[in-house]
Length: 281
Image 1 (cartoon, one colour):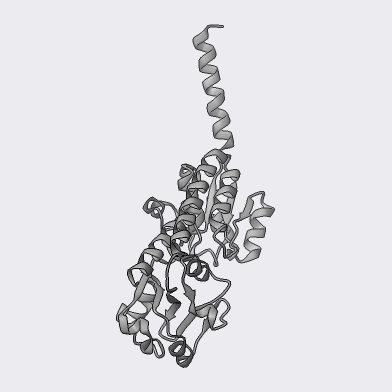
Image 2 (cartoon, rainbow, N blue to C red; image 1 turned 180 degrees about the horizontal axis):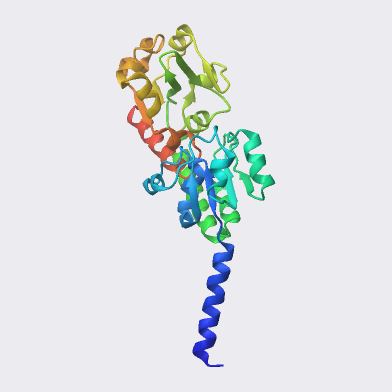
């Protein structure tokens, strides 16, 4: 057999193996979508959820809606072989239907920890057979987190920071322990006022408690600003209006997934937070 023929057959075999190994992926978490793109595996994505807003290219993919209100029929229409979801995806019976139909369903971790982002990178990379690229991405992410945390540790005095989860004027909560906001605030070298007050998760607060806790700075998300209508409206919240943060107009606004997703951009978010806190010194 001629060498040219052998080369052609070998190339065809490689192409077939590659196609056979390729997955048809539905991502049900914005942080997962970011990882798939970082692994250069976006050609395997057949659909994403409503939180998959980064990178911008993800907005051009078919969207299955909010991950908490899924439809088995809608998902199966994309003939997925692999669904990667966060632990809030559901209803559970929908995911069970997918598994019963032979679709592999894998959940990424959501432990509030600086170790979670890189762990999820490695998990998704293993699922896609991209371990080498995944390790490269994970190590770069860990290095950025470590550098930001080391710089934050040198803040003196430690600023007092409060995260506000604002769903509407009548739905206002402060972040405490067991949250992504707590992880980033403390990693940035600051005192988490919500945690200091004994809050767990995102908890309602009284004006008196917040005023007495005297945060130096506030963190809110873009969705929270949209709910209230303006940044100035944050400083008018009862209790908040009587804090050093309101007096100095010390407010930093993050895109929701960027700050709370514990995803691929967490190192950037932490770096940005540390930079902001240094600007207050």
